[in-house]
Structure formats: C-alpha cells, structure tokens
Length: 358
Image 1 (cartoon, rainbow, N blue to C red):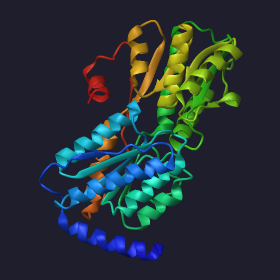
Image 2 (tube, helix red, strand yellow; image 1 turned 180 degrees about the horizontal axis):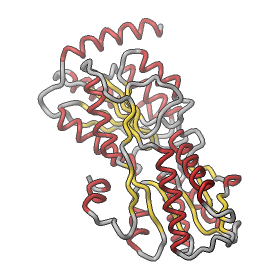
Image 3 (cartoon, rainbow, N blue to C red; image 1 turned 180 degrees about the vertical axis):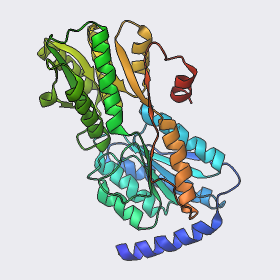
Image 4 (spheres, rainbow, N blue to C red; image 1 turned 135 degrees about the vertical axis):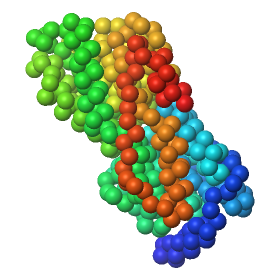
C-alpha cells in the first residue's frame, strides 16, 4: 500500500512541478492542533480542504509544521512563513502541536501533509530521533523537506535553516561568565549554575547544552560548577519550568546563575526569578518572549538572551521549499541563520529591533 501511495504522490508532484508558482498572493492558512490526536486530525483535515481550494488556482501548497502553535517564538517563525506565502504567491498551511512533548501529534501532522500531497514541507522536529524515520519517509516520497530550528539524526532532508547551536551554546556560556565576573563573583568563590531543558530528545537543545559545557569547562574557574547532574526536563510545560526554578533556588544555596537553552525554559527561569525577586542571580536564556523582554527592560536583573532569527527561518524555509518543488537545487544544504545577544544596553538598537520585531 505504501508503495502505491508513493507512486501516486510522485505522479502528483510531477504535475505540480509544471504548474509553477501563482502570480497572486496566496492566503496563509493556520490550523491549530491540540495535544489530543483526534483534535490534531480534525484541524489538519480543515487545512487540507483549504489547501485544495487554493491549489485549484494553480498555487503550490507548502505545509509548515512548527513545534508549538501559539508559542511566541514559533509565532514569529509562522509570521515569516506566512509573509513568504503572500509575497511569493503560495498557499502556506501552518500547523503545530500544543506541547513540546506531543511527538505523536506532530507525526500525525506530518503524515497529513504527505497525504495532502504538499508541494513542500517545512518542519521543526520535536524529537531528532523519533521524527527521523517519518521525515525520511516523506523525503523519499519526493516531497522537498526543509528543516528549521532542529535537525534529525540523518541526512535525509532537502535543506536545513537553523542556528549553529553548539556555537550558540558557547556564546551563552561566555556571556554568563562575563556577567558573573562583572558582578564581582570571585574565582575562588563557590558558584553553582543551574540548567533546565524543554526536552532531552531535541538535538537543538542538546547541542546548546554541549556548547555551553564545552566553553565552561575550558574557561571557567574551577569552583564555578554547572549542575549537570541535576538538569531538569520541563517538557515545554511553563508551570513545571517555574517550579524547577524555585526548586533550584531552594536546593542550592550557592546558586549564582541559571541557563535556559530554549524558550520555555527561559520563561520558566524568568518567571521564577521575578516571583522570588532574586536580582542577585544572573541569567542567560534563549529567544525573546514577552517575559524576558519585561525582565530586560526592568533593569534590576542581570540578564541576557541569545536571540535567533526565526522569522527568516520561516520565510526562507518556505522560499527554499518552493524553489525545490520547482526542480531547483540548494547551494548549501545547511544554512546557519545566526544569533545576537540582547540585553538592557542594546534592546532598542535598530539591528535588534529588526530581528525581534520584523
């Protein structure tokens, strides 16, 4: 049965390749997938029906599968994808799960995109291992698959637009170390640094933690210890992330700094530190949520955030998928979209604003 589906899909792709991209701007269709598989299926069917209506006009359809629909980080990526749809004249269908832990839900959304005979798929895998095989299957069916934010554990995809996460982790470690030194923390003083993560299956997060630890081990004073034996996993649950922050504060009397390698973990630390008024604890996080912006603008907290260019991941992800669907090739399979450190000193700079408010 799978072979028959692949043959039919290949034939459909051959026909789609002849249609080209429509001259009119396509409407961006957004579908919300709840954590339950039944709701995910219902919403995906709605998107599929809308996509069929658009393709009747000769437009190509690109499915964009984000990790968490409605999350501020992914909303910016979604905005980039939808802007590409408007400017390039393509139908963009955006879907996503409700939780970072809903791997089955994302798998269903991916299968729905393949069944809908998408001209291209842009996806941010929730889990680099679990999503490897289904993404490989989609890629082998002939559909261009562009990864954003996170890679899988194979080369079975068409292109990837993401941050060099090991290097970004090193940037975070260097910044956190600088902040501790600027605050006057002695190199002979016991200092504990806490980490919590959204998932252990995300290669993105794992690479950031790896880069952070590599830089820390090479450059930090011996008494400044990262609590790698007690890294908490919040599964993208903000209430859990806030609770973990409070646990760290209660358990470790020498806690001097925290590191959040993803948006949810960062929000958890921001909320926990704000609720307890711990302005003495330094923090470096990732991305630019409303919570961390408030903390940065407050001026009382010692904080920086490593901000990615996710709007461009979304825009260029759709653009790349569209070009590949027309038979073009990519010059580079993996593109590093880069990061920028945002803090109180530069939050209103033109360059920063062009990234956080594109």
